[in-house]
Length: 72
Length: 489
Figure 1 (spheres, each protein chain N blue to C red):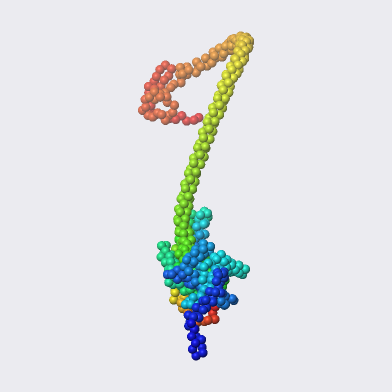
Figure 2 (cartoon, each protein chain N blue to C red; figure 1 turned 180 degrees about the vertical axis):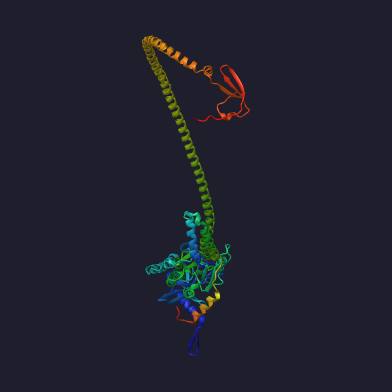
């Protein structure tokens, strides 16, 4: 989808909205900005509904930690 | 009574305990105030009686320990006082100042019979302990440390410190798992005791674990619930509070009680009154993300539409303005033209009128002038004519005189001329008569004609021609016999 993480996507989206609210976007740029905003909205919405964490990975890491008592 | 057997005086246990009871009852007859730490309240729910464990510690070690009894009626009264003053019930692990009497029961042994507990002492003690923790954390500059951390926009991955079977845990995960907005959370439970003496140690261990896998998580949630208000003073523990304050991730708490906030809750990144509220807090952070995104979507659509419509309106009004301005300019030019035409016309008419007037007066002047000139000329001509006539008369007279003189002269001269000429004429007449053909013929000359034509050359006549010869008396008709040419002499 894009290399932008959701925090950046959110901030960029806010920027675009504020730009358009301040009337800083001309009709010429409008199409491009709206296209970009649509992508950012998609990124944000998808982040709200998905997570990529894996419990097994965490459990494995926790096992490794308990083997090494010196680790803080 | 005691028995003597093999030189030994032997008492039964009851005799001993009864003796102790007697001694104690004689020695300790009154009630007195005692301060101690109530390690355990030991409330028996069925009977309603309590059997508190009282201890005194020095440097963390128990140096005195006594059992106590608190009968149902006393407990209820005291507990009500506590609830009123401390906003919480009597509980384990608090320091109390109580009124008691030492009693001894042969079957149950020594105990302190508590008849009253002063809630303000406990309050003060707990408060002092809590205040000490707060002060130390502030002095070390770490009281607000956890609050200064940054919570990710979406705290989606939660390390939960709780008890799997607790109501609070169940409430928490139910709220975050079944939210109606389909927000997705990831969570993992790090089980820990949340009540009693071992809370501090247990939570610390789990925090250590979480720290080792912290890149998998956004936030730590300490969730306790269903345990009522009992045993919360451990959350005022300095060691635990410090560990949470210094934890490298935001720690949020939902410890679930109705009384004063504990230090742990104060220093945590965020605190909610119950696990449910804590879950709702997390949902709220999602809302805080989601709502602006939705609003952004709506605003973008609205603003884009408005922008486009504004541009269109602007354009139309420009067109309208342009048209009206052009019309204005045209109409003003037209008006200018009209008024110029009018003024030109007027001016021209004025000029024409002037010129006409001038011409008319010029014509009048010319006519008048011409008449004058004509009159003068006529006069001059008349004068001239008069003069001419006068001159002509005199000239004519002169001429008449000259003519008369000339006639006279002519008459005289012509008379002489006539005499001369008549004389001359007579001579000429004589000559002319001598020369006439009749006279000539008389002198012997004849005229020969052939066929009426004069014969002047021999060549005209050949032999046998009939010629007519005229002489003075008449004609001779002859026939030619021959011709011969006169030879020159």
